[in-house]
Image (cartoon, rainbow, N blue to C red):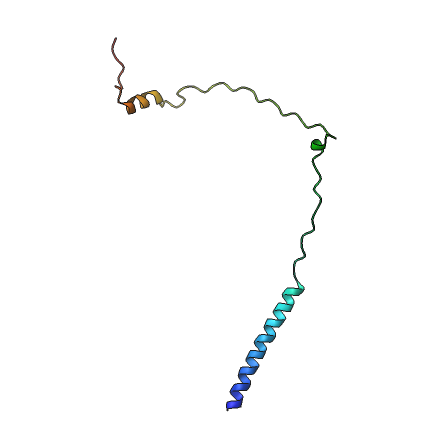
Length: 90
């Protein structure tokens, strides 16, 4: 019986090593090749062979209204400073 245990352990270890060897060989056979370096050509407009397109000038937008949504920043600042909110009577 002692020899059978030794034989079973040897077969198990041998099979494990064989599987690991096949997996390593397969991985090495299917390695990804290194990427090939490509020459990057400069833009034609950078070399001067083609003139660069002119960027259109943005139209001037009118200034937005002071209180577009009804919120009064001046009154809020006055309130935070501690000034009276109500307008003074003249």
